[in-house]
Image (tube, rainbow, N blue to C red):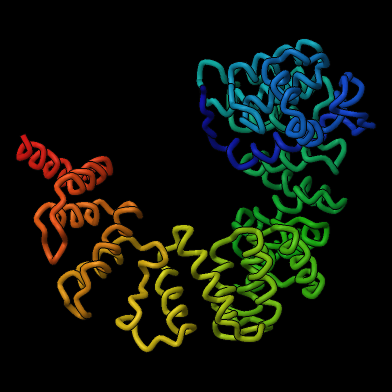
Length: 474
């Protein structure tokens, strides 16, 4: 299986370009009964996302697609070819996917030709990158403006062809015949390095017709100081336009700019309301900036809105937002204090590998059970996934150091640490069994099994102890 790399400057725009090309490859039509005797007209002209969502619903048909048995139209070949190249919903096979795209391109599916050009660019192979020009030229001539934008990039940077500012500009003009297209936004962005003023004018024109990609790119260029540090504040205008047109990237950058006092939107209230809408829809980076803006940054304190942003971000799986949400529940910030919810969130974070939260989970558990001290209950971060803490606590019980000696509790904790993947805990428990230490009954067979586990975890000490035990048994 071939893996793809992303050479600059393609990397910055590639994922979005490919996504745009496949989502707009055709217009959606009526679907019919997908499961029963599917015909080409049922789905061959539907968008990529619709086709692959249905592939999930019918395993037998999915298998046919993976093997190519039922692929008839050029659009089907394009969609499934791209799925194979990128491993979307079906197993990744770049060579097979490219072969399908080439067949579709030969059948005059221009989106397939354009996609081949980008896949070749990703492979970053000097021997084949010039092939990209042929595929993009054919697709551009066939009306795919994203391919024309690809040619703009190639000529602007000399990728796969000679560098030519004039040709780069010419293909940008073609890409921008319709200012609302993604192709125009991309082509103009590629011109920034060679014709910054021309690029700015095109991006502004496109942004003014609510091309959110153009707004994002123009805002980023201004914010990064491409047109001078004295113009950074001007990024607020395109970002605000993009944000109000539902661009999460624009909203995120703009709220961050408000926090740092770099950007001031004309209608901050509308920007924040749109940002909250996008946050609830799953834009976790926007949630992060909102939580800072309304709470942790202190720019415009509004604890309830900060809490809502953290809650939305956590609901979409962002661990940072879950941690902040736990803090809000624990401290009663923006919501009534709720230690049970805080403890549950910290425990979830701990169980999912965020060990920094284990101590908070343990402390809250102690507080909720009215324990006076860890020594009285034995509750520590061991209970929340910290294997080394299990081992430390086990030795305290085994030796009677810091707490009453308890052999049964010690062996239980050594076993817990071993089960959590701590090889030293396996060795310690094995040694107790091997040498009948601290009141543990001698059990050579159990000791060897524990040494085997430690050895399998990569512990040299475990392997050495196993060899010694086996030698002694001969």
